[in-house]
Image 1 (cartoon, rainbow, N blue to C red):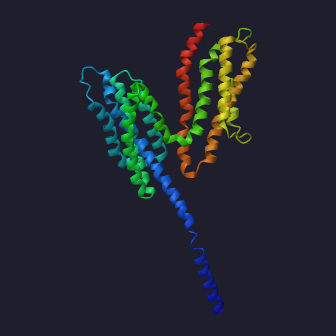
Image 2 (tube, helix red, strand yellow):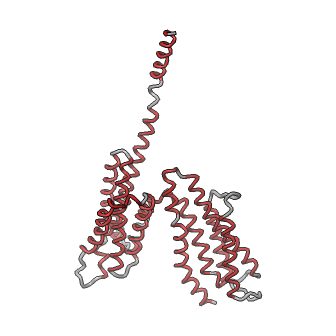
Image 3 (cartoon, rainbow, N blue to C red):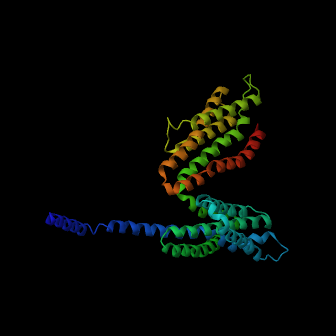
Length: 360
């Protein structure tokens, strides 16, 4: 029995010796993860400090509205650093209570908002507000991403640091190069909106279709409904508008409640169909070819169905296709889609509505 036990032990030892090379597979996985982490933190450092550097590079152009102050660029420096200082002072007191996901989302929105605000500004005060947004983005992002390095190998700190240095070089160089190439400061700043978008790049597959869907449907609702007026019906103009709104909301309710019986993976198709709705109804406003209001009723009900389906399926797809550790951030980041689409439609629907009213 002892011999058998010994042979079993020796057999087990030999098995261990034969299978000793197996840890190489985890080693390969570890090497792959190392480079993913390295590239990821380098890009985070780049994106985080990019707007901060660009605002300093654009200081002279930002203050060009002011003619009496000597065009002193230190005002931009203060606006670009004081909010970061406040964030770093307050961060140890309670920032840990706010999850990482909304912090990253706020940082990305502030970075994009800084470029837009400064690009379209016509006063120094507004421009400096844009610079403050860049500072908030940079400060909040730095505190957040440096805290995240605690959950990764120590080497990522070096890559993060290198990325922030790369932001300094690439930010200043890109602003110099684009303005030297003939772009105005406004065009240059707007062209840099892609950098904050890198923070959400992996989610654009979900975000963009939902933005497009909501842009198209609210463009229809608030820009075209009042112009889709039929005189050959007993309904007054106000009653027609109320019916349009009710049918739209009925479609939204039905499709948002339909996930158990109808699931759609490719929400881009819904975005395309909603855009076709917009083009079709815009053409009817222009040419007036639909003979009956009941056809418009059907189209508007269909519009609501598309909008509700896009909403529920987008978040359902995120729940299915993202990992547990990324799901919270993905949900929080994608929440901006409907609001962004509605806001853009409001900006464009108002002038178009007035233009079409003048034509009629």
